[in-house]
Image (cartoon, each protein chain N blue to C red):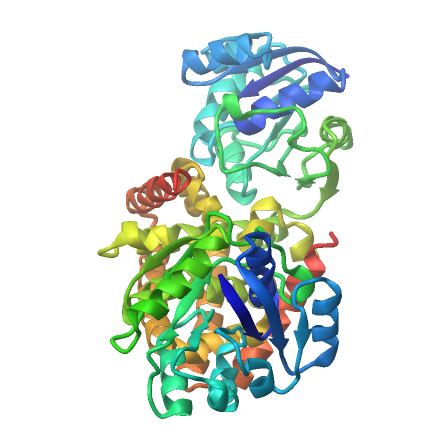
Length: 286
Length: 286
C-alpha cells in the first residue's frame, strides 16, 4: 500500500499506472506534476490524479514513492528539481525506455545514487500518448523490467516490484546494460525501421498514390511510426550506442537479402524467409 | 455471370475469390486445379470449388474465365499446360503480386499475348495461406488493380473488372510498371524489412530472452514475417529490379537516421519522425 504517490509526467504510462493502482486499491493519494497545467487539470477531471502542483519539488514533497514519467531528455532536470524532496525513505523509480541514461541522469542530478532508487521500464504502450489515452488495463499481462542497481536497497526493490505487480504486470529483473541491448533490438530498431520506411515513401513523388495501394499488412507494419516523435528522439539520444549497434547489425542482414535478390539466389532467400517465419510463428505462443 | 470458372492454384486468394463469387451469385460452376489432390479434396469439402482435375489443361477446358492463382514462379509452367484449352473467347487473368513477370511468363509460354489476357492483382491477403484460410469477405473494400495490356480486348477487361467488382473489391487500373514500383514500395520492401529484422534477432545469442521482451508493437510490426516463404522468394525474383531500387532507397534513408543518431542530432531526428508520423496519421483515414 502506498500512502502518497507522486507521478511527474502524467502521460499514457504515468496516467495508466495511476489508474491501475487505484483499481488495485494500492494507493491512498496520487499527486501529479508536469510542465503544463491543462494536462494536469484534465488528469484530475479524469480521476487519474487527486491533485497536482506545477512545481515538481512541492508535488514530490512527502511522497512515499516518486515515479518519473517524463521523457528521457527531461529526467536530469526533473531529478534536480525534486532533490530536496527526497528522504532516506523515499522510493524513486522511473518508466524510461532506456535505463543507462536514466541512471546517469539521476547520478548527475543528485551527485549520488540513493538507496531508494530502482530504475524500471514497463514494456507496454500504444502509438498514442497523453493522459487522455491512459487506461487501467494497459499493463495487464505485460512485462515490467526492473533494473536494480548495486546501490538499490532490498526494501526499495520490493516496493517497486509490489507496485508494478499490483497493476497486473509480470515483473522481471535484469541488468541495465542487458535491458538496453534487448530493447534496442525489439523496440528501438523496429521504430527506426517504421519511421524510415514511412518517411521514405512520403517523400516519393506520387506518395498519395503509393499510400492508396497500401494494404492491411502495411498499416500494421507502420503503426508504430505514429508514435510520439519527441519521445523517440530522446530514446535515440539516450540509447545511442546499443541502438547504433543494432542498426548496423540490421543493415548487414538487410544487405545479405538484397545481395541474394540481386544475384537471383532463391535458395538463400528461402532459407532466410523460412528461418524468420519459424521465429515469428513461435512468438505467437508467448 | 460466369458460366464456368477455372481456378488454378486454390489457395487463400484463389479460394477466397471462389467463395466471394459464389456469395455474389456470379458463377455457375467452379473447377479447381493444383499440384496436390489433398488440397483440392479439402477445397471441395469446404464448398470452395465444385470439382477438380489435377491436370490443369483438363480443368481449364471449356472454362469462360481462367484465373491463375499459383505462385509467381509457377506461372510460366502452368500457362504452357493450359495453352491448348484457350480459345479466342477465353478470359485469362491472374492474381500475382508483380505484373511484369506474369506478362513475360504468359508471353513466353504462349508465344503471344492473347486478347483475353488481363493481368490483375488483388491487394488483399493475410499472413496465412492455403484454402483453409480462404473466406468470402477477404476482398470487401480492398483494392484490386488491373493492369490491362495493349493486347487486352475491351471485353476481357470488362469481364475481369466485373468479376472483381462482384467480390466487393474496389477495382482500379494502372500500368504494369507503375504497379510493380508501387507494390515494391508498400508491400515488397516492408516484407523484406520484417523478414530481415526477425531473422536478425533470431540469430542473436539470447533470442528467446529477446523475443520474450517484445511488446505489442513488435508483434504488429513483424506479423508479415509469418508470410509464405516460397511466395516471397518468388516475388523477390519476379519484381527484382523495382524491389532492389526501393531497398537501396530505404537503406539511404535509414543511414541518414543512423548518422543523425551517431552525431546526436536530435533536431534532424525530430524532423524525420514528425514527417513520418504525419504521413502515417493521414493513412488512418483512407
